[in-house]
Amino acid sequence: MKFVKEEDEKRRDYVFQKDNKTKFGARIIILILIILVGAVVASGIHFEWF
Image (cartoon, rainbow, N blue to C red; front, side, top):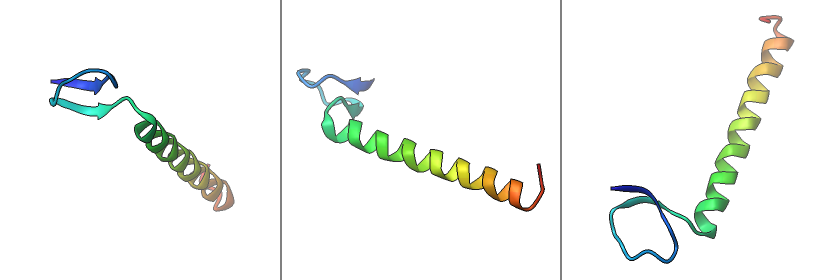
């Protein structure tokens, strides 16, 4: 089983396909995770946990 399938490969056993939708989704998820980490750090500083 392959983790990432190239666009021109003809196979069905893969987790992610390397196309624009997958890249866009990955960027959105990474952006959301960065925002969440920033919010945790900001709340820790505000409540003097750090």
